[in-house]
Structure formats: structure tokens, C-alpha cells
Image (cartoon, rainbow, N blue to C red):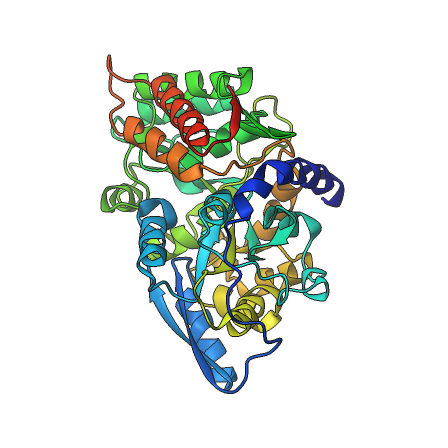
Length: 438
């Protein structure tokens, strides 16, 4: 896995020059102490499964720092907007959850503090280089990485057996399996297209070899019409046109209801999805299994769907305490155990040394005792190394999400949505005074 990620690191590092202009507006913060000075209270906003359990465990074991936790919607479901608004209003929490894809956006807007004076080289050595690179922009450290999020395919093994459907290993086989499922039960579908979540689609493009954002010298090159993206767009448009997948908002009552009644028998997600299913449909324990995500040629390949880091907001006066808590969550056995043992998180730690801890803490009986962490390990090693995130993810995803929600037979298409995301990205980068090609 190290070899694959070293290539990724070079891709991410290549954005440093273009980001240097943006990171100049990042906050420096007023906290320059190396350690918290006496009992302090910090505030933390996040949405990842098991977060409250982690906070409770930390508070019970620490007297010098106490954490007040507020659960917010996931980033793309309103969480990022809430954080941004709080930063603008000057009442942001000390620490926030930010996915790797959105970190450059928050850095470029000046919402975060450089934590390099607290998150030292010795601290970073506990984590794999790739996770550190994803949170290092413009030569500065902006967040404490927590997990990686390789793709995975979750499926109802009992219904796959009942309908005599083989678990697909390629996207061609996935389409045939989708046709079989619909034929076996007119109401059932193999999976769901999430119109509210562009990141799932982007992970598919990432897996296929797309490279939407690329920084060369002082220019951002934006390309969403490459063969890989075009292939993925046409494929999913075909599934939607043939009514082979459901179209429901991610994690909505409709989606959960379809899982419960067996009309959705598969879920194209990521490593953290194992905990999502376990938490939403506990009554289906023993009926689900996990497989590698289908690929175009049958060889292992993955994108990344999510992946969490913890960042300190620009106005926090408790940077040292916030980083201490973030590191405890990300780099200690106690922190990982507290999150995974809650039963709702299947996080795949960025720190390789903590993956055995996560595996042991996660009760795999829900998946019939399957070694899902071995599968995640292999999927992580197959993540396509040629993807980097740009500094306008929010703009890109908002434009795509708006069009995704309007896709209909004979109406707007996925290609229209991707083009809208491309155009919005170019316009925003140009507005910021950056050089753009695409």
C-alpha cells in the first residue's frame, strides 16, 4: 500500500504551488502554547458514527480537557454550510470534522488554523504518509487525519442467493445482475443512485481513472470530459434510464425503508458503510455481506468516498487542547476502540497500526463473521493514485447536486450535471483570480 500512496502523495504535493496563493489567508490563531494550561473546555462539531462515544470516553479519561460535542448533518447535507456560517459569524466551534475532499475549500477561505506547531513531525509519524499529504496544503499542516475510505459493495447475501444472482466483479456484470434482480422482483433493485451526494459519483470517476483537478505550476487544469468520466457518466445514465437502480436521497427514510423491506438489496458505499448498515437495519444481522466494488476490467481498483480529518477553526483560542483531542481520536488505541465499539462505526483508520484494533473492536457477526477489514485493506491498496482535490469542492458539488436532483427521463442528464459542475468550478477559480484551463 505504501508504494501506491507514495504516488498519490506526489499528485497531492503537486497542488502545493497553486494552493500557496490561497493558504496565505489561513488563520494563524492566538494559541501558541505547546500544551493546554490547566482545565479547558473545547467544542467539537461532527457527524461520523461513534463520535459521541469517543467524546464520552475522552471526557471520562481526561481531567485537563473536556469536550462539548454537537452532532451536525453530514458535510454535503448541510454540515459544511453550518460550519462556514459559524466561522463567518465568529462563533465557530474549536474543532470540526472535514472530509479530505473539502479541506482545500476551507483552507482557501481562511476558515482554519495551521496546526503545524502542535501536530508535530513526531505526531505525524504515527500516521501513514498518504494521510498526512492529504492534509498538507501549501506546505502547512491543516488537520489531523483520521481514516481512509476505500469503496466497497454491500449486498444481501440471502436475496442474492434467492434470486440466483452472482456477486458482480465487473461493471458489466453489475448491470446484468441489476437486470436479474429487477426480473426476479419488479420492486427490487440492486442498488441506489444518490442524487443528493455527488461524492459517490466522484468516487466512481476516481476509480475509473479520472483526474478532474490538476495543478501545474500556477494553473489549475479542470477536466471532466476525459474518457474515464464519460464512461462512468454514460454507464450510470444507462442504469437510470433502464430503471435498474433506485433513486433516493442518501440515508433518507425512503432508502432505509427500502433496505428494511428488501426492495434495495445492495449498497455501493465505502468502508464506513458497514457501520451505517449495522446502525440503520440491525434487524438484518447475518443477512448482509461485503465484496470489493465492481471494476471495469475485473482487476482491483477503488476510489475514495469520504475520509475524515479534524481541523481547528481560525478563531479558536484552544488550539493545543483541540489538537490534543483530535490526536487522541486518531492515533490512540483508546480512541479507536471507543469509536468502533459503539457498534455503529466501521472506520478504517489511516494509521495502519490501529487497523487490528479496529478489526477487533468491530463486531463482525452482523456480516456473518466475515473479515471485512481484510477486504478494506485490499481495497485501500487499490485506490487509484491519480486523483487530487481542487480548492472549490463546495462549488463543484453544489452545481452537480442541483442538476442530479432534476435528472429525469427525457430531461436533464448526468452529463449535463457534470458539465454544470465543470463550468461552476472554472467560474469560481477565475473569480478568485487564479489561472484556469478547461
